Image: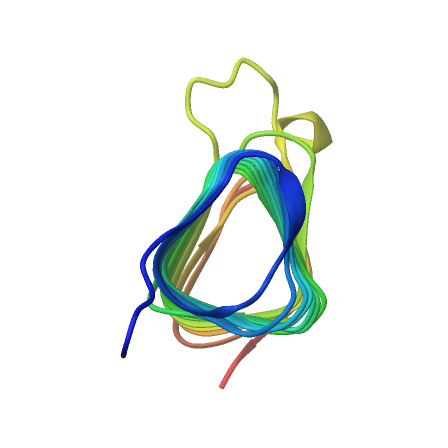
Length: 236
């Protein structure tokens, strides 16, 4: 793609979109058209009215993308809002990410928090922060470390799903130590702690401490911690 140099915004104002190598916003900048660039870095406050495509997105300040965002790598240390779809291949969230429709990519590391109104789809999804997913969370490998507060998804699907209370926590099992809520959790190999779900379905299912499960359907193996409650168990 033909690139027209760098766009460095230190003050405030509106700027055209187009093709750039690097966009760096240290003040307050609004970009009014579609943008394609190698680097999109925000240290101040930015708004992109249309779509953004970048190799690398780094948000240390606040960024509001009204359209879609597509990026090879994304690091969010501040706040990033995406109006419609975010395709972030390798994403690390230390701050806050909000997505209006769908979030997808290869590898997600959540140490801060995400809120997504639709589905989330990754190859690997590793959360030690918090998430609120209105649709389906799906990944081949899902690792959730519960620190505090409640994480929730409508449904969770994957190959290997591991949900654990954060280690070194002095808190007892229960809501204070972090909790996961989902209607359905379905995978091949499932281990859960501090999880509340209507249905858990898998080949090998281990229901650990602090869980409240309505129905477990399993094909190969089911183990249950004495402190966990399961209303109905069915081998299929």
